[in-house]
Length: 81
Image (cartoon, rainbow, N blue to C red):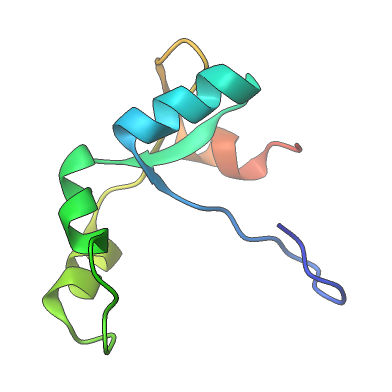
């Protein structure tokens, strides 16, 4: 997503299962993280210091393609939509 005036975009990271579904539906590579991280997204955080936020910040991010195969992070980030 690119906002007016920005020269960069934002990308979302999804739990692996959801990332795979999105990749299949859109035929594009999608950023993913471990499915277990969904527990850290269940409730809004009140501060960046909460353990759920800290866990999300530390989690490994990877990519997945439309056939559910892993994709290098650099490929997902650098590709054009």
